[in-house]
Length: 486
Image 1 (cartoon, one colour):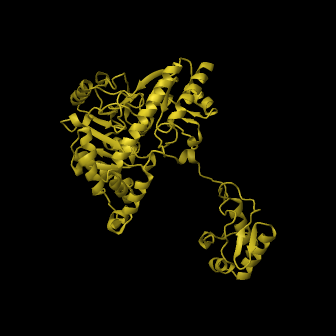
Image 2 (cartoon, one colour):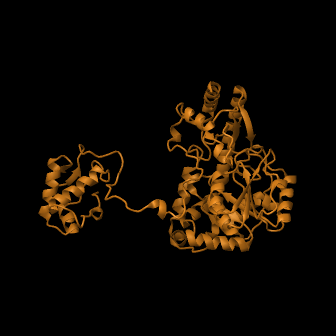
Image 3 (cartoon, one colour):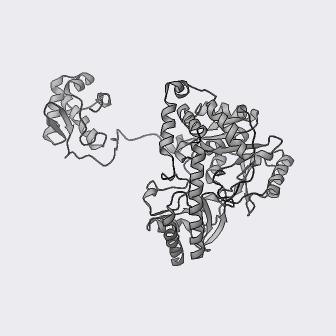
């Protein structure tokens, strides 16, 4: 198949003859990596017609490139990018001119200066990837997900595939969440109280924009999910970081003028602490006292292989103060970017309107595929498979940690997929992580989870969802040995 003729354009103000300009255009495409070795060029007739030049002009340009070994010719087939052509390993567009915009002055807001955990793109090549939140391809049900995706592409689902929901969501997915997912957390909700989002982070962003402004105050856990802190900073509200303990967020520490409380009661991020029922009741009472709203991020509740998880905070809320956030990104795969939010109809109406202004709705095909995967029982089977595997890995990592005398700062009482660790005082785990990378070990430094200028630097997180159980012990040995060297 030839390179599309539509990708060829002559510079309007180009210098030189038409033949030279065509030759330069093709050479630049090869040198930048846009055209790959072995790809076929358009026929001289088609390219001449597209460019509005004579066929002989294109033929002469091809002939010159052939002589310079940029192209090769095949009898009765055409011209191809030569095996000897100087093609770079990746596509690098040719710079067309020097930019003159002063971006320091033009940028009204900056979003690139917040905390961001850089995960290596080649983490799967690591021998010991203690990485958090990534999918293990050996545990995912590829076959049935593919069947559900194909079914969602069928004629019967044509409208859900191609239609513009505007401000609605796939009714099959909403129904499953209402009838099956939420009852597992003790939550009852009508479709008008459910909104599909592009993952939990999108839900948190929507909640922050609807509930907060520069005159508001938000209470957050410390440490907490770093992306939440950054998106709240962009909301320009006042932040009140509250230090968590072994029981999660202490309600008495929440300031008097707090408007919104963000919390992860079932599985605190990143310490994995679980808030007991008496503190949950106290948190609701504190919110009532402050007339505040609570945003509950209930991530990883499905990964409860050590015992049944506590009911969600939303399930014991009788006043509509709690906005519940859930996600399928951890239980299925992070690239799915599919989550949901549950709240009072008045709140969901505004969040839905904001979502429609930004992205209208998550792709219909993804929603319908997920709806089939959930409703046909494949999701439950996957959760059981993942829970069994995670329990095996949890046992292996805890044994290895105890064997090497490493210090655990927090472990989920119901399960989960990570353990919160504390290195000895004086050890910077950001530097430790860089040292371990050279030994094919990946850990996640904990500093960016904390708020304020004097963040502790000796915490780190060990994820075990994507590492083979037989490699856990050797990986922990590498970590312990490197810490001892410090």
